[in-house]
Each structure stands twice: as C-alpha cells, then as structure tokens.
Image 1 (cartoon, one colour):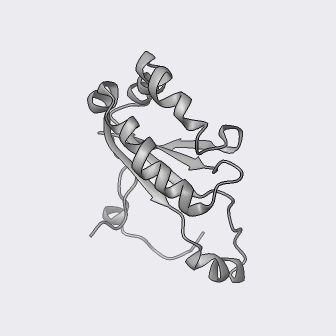
Image 2 (cartoon, helix red, strand yellow):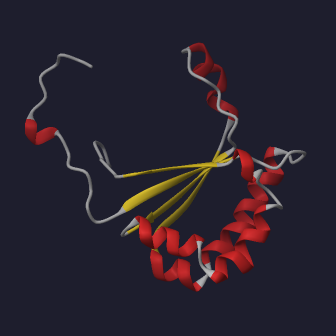
Length: 137
C-alpha cells in the first residue's frame, strides 16, 4: 500500500443502490473464440435478457468478450493470462434479486439448458461484490 496522502473526500463510498455479480465464462471445449462470442451474444444473451424475471430484477446485464490483444503485454508484466473467454456482468438492487433470477422456473426451463451449448459450467465461476467507483467519465 502506498504511503501517499489521500484526501478523505477522494475516497468513494461503496454503492448502496446496487450490487454486482461477475461471471467468469469458460467456453465449451471444441468451440473457437468466435463461435463462443457469436453464440453468447446472438443466442444466449437474448434468452437471458428477455426473461420476465430478468426484466423485473436485473438493472444491468453486460457481456465482456475477451480479446487476445493484451496477452503478450500482460504476460510480460508478470500477470497471468486467464483461461476465461468472457465476463458476464449482472447488477441488481440486491443479491436476493439476482438469486431469484437464477433460481426461477423460467431460468431453469429456458436459459440453464442452453448453457451447455457454449460454456463449461464446471470451470465457470462467479465473483460477487459491492461497487466502488474511482473514475467514471
């Protein structure tokens, strides 16, 4: 940690109006990156976004599609090159609202079975946490 003095007014608060869950997406073996991105964006994304429970509970759903453009630079700096090929971002008023989506009958009937078409579920993980924004232009 730096010894640099930081103004108390410059330290942002953790947002209380929403929470975020990040999904680290592992693609299904045998798929190319392009096949993964296309399926996720054109098929699975709309399935998830168009569920009534999603429209009711989710404030933001984004897909972050991985690019190899930074791999050499990241590795040269000593960072790990992650095996994930995307990040799913889910924001809601509470974790309960997010869980309600993933535990709903609609999700289990419509979206859950579709996951097998493009992700390796056993290697896909999630990180939940509060939001602290330092720069937002």
